[in-house]
Image (tube, rainbow, N blue to C red; front, side):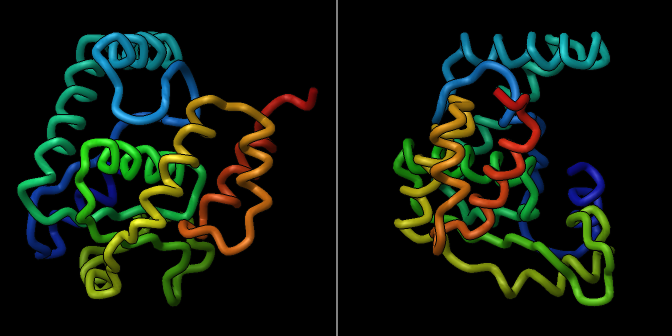
Length: 193
């Protein structure tokens, strides 16, 4: 996300840029807005998962800042940029669930699964600043149905329950259309029982 964030900063678009740093389909967490104990558990998990490559105190500070920026979203426009991949879709579900839980129901969404002339497309990080800027007008308001669906998806990703993930993966016409493929991908990464 840092590469895409850097290119967004150069795209001449309005607003502050926040790159979300967390692997939300792995490790201990609950659905929705985390409490301080959950943030500490996440920081410890990420420190251990990287064999100390990420310092727990630094991770905790980053996590706290992310949620503070999200809490402040009630007072300013919010545009969410995400790829259609598992990493981003679990993050999208979580961010929308957190906003919904706080009563922040105004956000725009850009979810990109392809870009003309870029094959194979792996994500927003491949796009130059001008290419990112060209996508800005395609943003759409997040609907009530999308917020409610995100709460359901966030609970499935957080709980890592194979039955709930399988149910999500089989949905046709999901309000967030990239979530079913992300849930299917997560199931593929899990050990076969």
